[in-house]
Length: 337
Ligand code: DAH
Image 1 (cartoon, protein in one colour):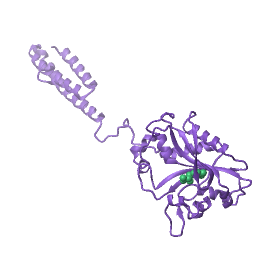
Image 2: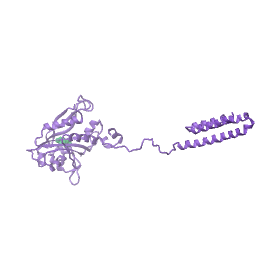
Image 3: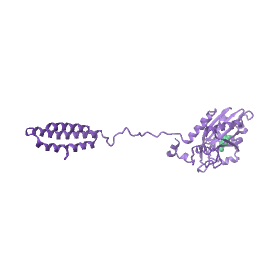
């Protein structure tokens, strides 16, 4: 090796070191140029082959090679370290820590759909307080103190004689007491009963009440509107069945079943093989109820209905236990978000 070779080798080493992409690559270069079997020992060994008059210059060149390569490696190492990520560095490419967006509770999702459907056929939302009077909850609804259906709905009474409403039907009474006919309302709310909690019962639950009062409302309106509701909430092919029933505040009264949305009426586990699912209670408003709120039963007629929201949510969303709706376990609720 001659002096020129040494000089170009030095340049090559320095530019390779400066371009080293990583600490590993840099270490390889260190071994290649300064290591025991590397270029530096080779340079030293070739000193003896250099003409005697050139040796001082070659010696200086060899020394410069060692010093410059050593310091270039050190400075490249510092560079690489300063661009590497320290343990506590902010990594802007990591997914953010944003809060989880909330969503409507399944009960309220179903409620929103129910309200939306009735809104389209002219129903307004009405509400009332959870604590109501015995008159609004029972007496005005044609359920006097000795009526057996009061036992069924035995409830929580407050010291002043008021009660936690057992149904949303008292909202009908409040609304009629405060507004002349015609009336077309949909009234959601909580209801309370002294019930032992199990997979299908809860002492607190939700209902939606409907009331349509005008001059000539008939059973045909009731059937038409509830069939429209069935088609909108479950699907166009749903069939609706009206079974005679009894409620103190309607005459005649019906229970309304929809064909099972899972088996389409064929019979399955969900509908206990009947093909039908009971969805709500309804009927023509009893003339006595009109008397109780000061409406003229000769000139007014109307229909009313009431349905349990939990029941509909559980059927539509295939929830097996009513208690899951109140535990507020985010893992459960997220499935419906
Ligand atoms: N209030 C009834 C209940 O809780 C449901 C109901 C049935 C409401 C018939 C009505 C109706 O308005 O007409 O079981």
